[in-house]
Image (cartoon, rainbow, N blue to C red):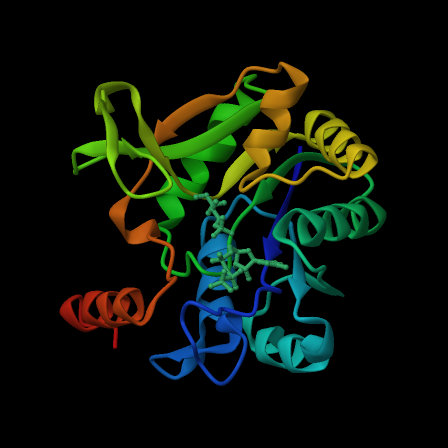
Length: 232
Ligand SMILES: Nc1ccn([C@@H]2O[C@H](COP(=O)(O)OP(=O)(O)OP(=O)(O)O)[C@@H](O)[C@H]2O)c(=O)n1
Ligand SMILES: C[C@](O)(CO)[C@H](O)COP(=O)(O)O
């Protein structure tokens, strides 16, 4: 059962505000994207990785990933995350026609534990059409209006923060992205597209190390994590 991982890495990283696209920002001497792909490969359950790169940086990305010894295809990404994933998915199906399970994993979640990646794949292999790693929320959550006035306190017991990799049975993800492309409708995650099909989405436990590096604060936290563990 071939497992392919798609890595959307084409974002500009505006909230991080670095001089290069976020996926190419270095931590411990290597781009975030290289850390992310190393983790996918270390999981031992991924046969091929397709990276959606910043369109002007495909050669740089290919060179950066060349030393990992992973089977990698690099394609130019799109203007939105959903488009980048769709472009990578089409390239994956051409490169690995017998793909059965597809993971979609943000380059920005560079330090996701390989064991968590395996748990997502295992759940899809066990029959779930779509699987997402999640964490409970630590803060009280309020709903506010456009002026910032509180409308309600939301019951957080049933809320979850969503991470990647998200795992899918191949046909479900293809149908979800085809429908999104036809309707010109994106979503902030791929499971959101699957939900629109009415397909069930299963959750598995996420991990704090799979944090999305979005802001300079997040980058500092990730650096501290690596140092703390003696990895940097
Ligand atoms: N057009 C886009 C936009 C985002 N992404 C990827 O989707 C992941 C999650 O997006 P996010 O972390 O929000 O990254 P950016 O869009 O780069 O961040 P910002 O909104 O701050 O610019 C990242 O790995 C990012 O590279 C992508 O492949 N193509
Ligand atoms: C897919 C995702 O990582 C799930 O939490 C997230 O939605 C992507 O971040 P973005 O800022 O919405 O692109």
